[in-house]
Length: 224
Image 1 (cartoon, rainbow, N blue to C red):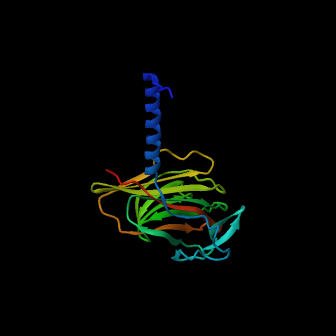
Image 2 (image 1 turned 90 degrees about the vertical axis):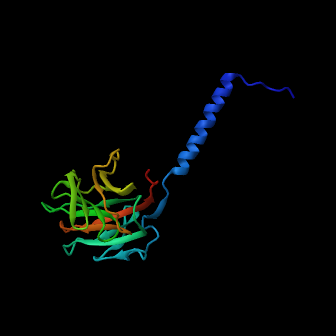
Image 3 (image 1 turned 30 degrees about the vertical axis):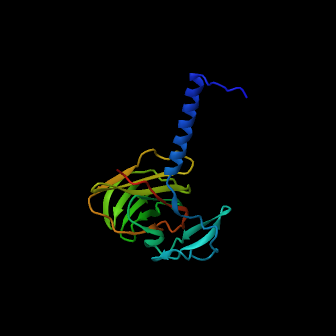
């Protein structure tokens, strides 16, 4: 068989192709892997998920639009929460989709949390027109946010650790619109967070149900 000599151009193209393949493989190897996902498709309707810790409220799984959601009823009027997923501390993100409606001049309030019942909470407060970030009962930051009644709202909350600083960051956006490239709200903390599970929160002040689905907890790459 005649030996084929590759030209410098062919060698250069081959090298670029190999580098691209190796780069893609490395990027895929570093992709965050979900630690927990739940769209409630495997949960019996009329019940709460067995792996959830219901803190309060009548949370139940319901059929909705060809899928399933975890619904908090529109009464009584109070704040209710539930914990889910693994116990984590930092370099973690949680995401969810939330749906609710206003009634007259009354609005619901809902949120997503990390680090347990008294941990960090990203909260949509339509009555104030704001997106808020809490640690326990302490308000850390708030920014303007336009919520759309009857549209799915996507929430993402994460906490990352770098040196002696823990950065908490959150974003919210309506389904069908681009996800913001950068966090909408942040806070830098110098105290190590306590480990805890992720959380969902709802306050049905509009007397209308609040529905959650597509819960995902993801481990993030460690920060330098």
